[in-house]
Length: 79
Length: 294
Image 1 (cartoon, each protein chain N blue to C red):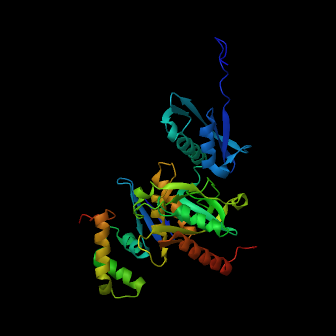
Image 2 (image 1 turned 180 degrees about the vertical axis):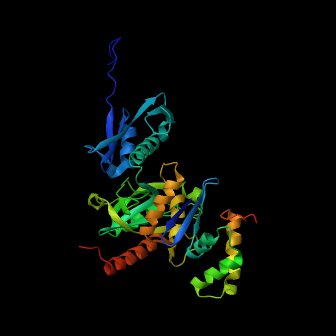
Image 3 (image 1 turned 45 degrees about the horizontal axis):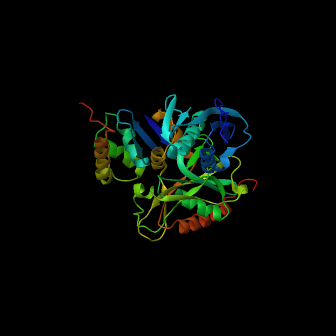
């Protein structure tokens, strides 16, 4: 379950009764993670909005995705 | 002179107190006047003689063999037995919970609230972060009292209702207490805060800003930083007093509220200095963005 808070997001996992906040950048990454995109796809799409080169976003996007995986906000899609 | 054999004294008359909140009230009854006096002190301006509106419930305290049987407290079954020492607190909590249940459309948060002019400001944080002390310091600067520990908020409008239980601040008697230790702080004695009766909020006001309080155990400058709105939702959730078991509904309401009302985090060591800072900051803010019609 998610709730929008201006351009940010609160995600709630009923199974663990935990809630997480996402700022606008984290939200943009999380919303693009639909099971079809790779990290490179995310960087490419985010770079257009951020006005930066995809390779400059790679480390931050990877870190954010790793953190969301750790928190259970994302799971790895089966190929 | 002893009564004649077979004579039974009439039972003592029950004393009745009404705990009023907006258009709701709770009736508290007991034959123990000392217990009711303690309760009246704790309720402050919320204890009224002539209630208006609709009754949200009845609570009765029946002294029995050194204990007190409390009837009507929500969530405690038909009755509960407590020691005399804890009876006023249990009655107080029972009355507050009945009002919360009656108004479960509101967001209930562990926070102090005070107003300057026509705008209210909320000071949110767990016990020991200085809510009561900060609110008391603002009252001394002419602010209007809304609450020192319970905030009742309309999610859709962001308006906050007065919930003016008697304000009490913790007193440090000189023994060493680690002031960053919430459990230790809760052992400190509380004393009543004096304030004029006309300084109590009479109607809901729009909430202008939330201050999330962080006590700094090292003296230093006061630090105020904006709180991202999603983070504000999580902090409000941690301090929620709402009785609802529906976590998703509560988060949605808090998200709606946090979208309307900006929040900051204030880190401070000295409550009086923090109150001076908040007062100056708010006075400047209101001068720049005055209330419409003010």
